[in-house]
Amino acid sequence: MEKVKNRQKTVIVILYVVLVAIGLLWLFPAIWMFLTSFKTQVQTFQIPPVWIFKPVIDNYNDLFFASNIGKYLLNSLIITGTSTVICLFLGSLAAFALARFRIKRNKDISFWILSTRMFPPIASAIPLYLLLRNFQLLDTHIGLIAVYITLNLGFATWMMKGFFNDLPVAVEESAMIDGCSRYGVFFRIVLPISSPGLAATAILCFIFAWNEFLFALLFTGRVAKTMPVVLSGYITETGIRWGALTAASVLTAAPTILLAILAQKYIIRGLTLGAVK
Image 1 (cartoon, helix red, strand yellow):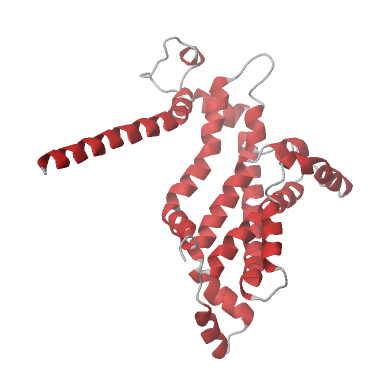
Image 2: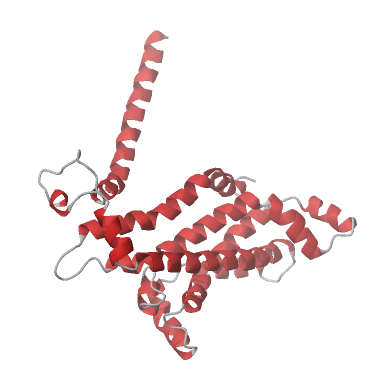
C-alpha cells in the first residue's frame, strides 16, 4: 500500500510540474510583453536579455502625450460595448423564441444562424464595404458597430438558446398563470435566471469584437480606428517600435483581462449551464 501511495504522490508531483511548466510557457509572451513595455530602447535590444532592471514609463508617456492613444481606446470601448449590448439584447430575444415557440424547421434555423460564423470573414469584406460606402458609414462608429453585430449576433443567439433550453418551463407557466405577460416572463424571470449565461455570452462577444482586426482595418480611418489597427501601425517597413508596441499591447489587453477576472465565476457557471442535461 505504501508503494502505491508513494507512486501516486510521484505521479501527482510530476503532473503538477508539467502543468506549471506549460502554464509558464503559455504566459511567457505576455510576461515578456509586459516587461518590455517598461524598458528603454537600449534594454529592449540588449543581448542577453535584461530581466532585472529599473522600470521606466517613457513608452506610456509617449503613447498618451505624443500620440492620440486615448481616442482610439475610447473608440474601441464605444464600438465594442455598444455592439455587445445590442447583440445580447437581440440574441436573447431570438434565442428565447427558438427555445420556446413551435417554429417549423427549428433545428435548420438554429444551424443556419450558427453557420454565419463558419464563413471566412474575408468572404464578406467586399459586400460589407459596398454597403457601408453606399450608406456613407465608412470610418464611423455606427458602421463598425453594425458590422460587429452582424458577426456576433448569430453566436449570441446560439449560445443563449442553449441556456434557455435548460430552464424549466414550469416556472414560466406559473408566472403566466399569475397574470404575467410573455414579455414580462422574459424580462422578469428568464433573464435574471439566465444571468450566468448572459455574462458568459457578453464576455465572449466583447472579446471577439475587441480583438477584431480585419474589418476595423478595412472600414475605418483616422476617426473610428480601434486599438488592433493602432497596434499594426507600430510595425513599419523601417522597423518595429517595440517600446510603443508592447505598451499599447498592454493597454489593449488590460480591459479584457480585467473583465475576465471580475466575471470569472459567471463565465464558468455560464459555460457549464447548458453543458449537462
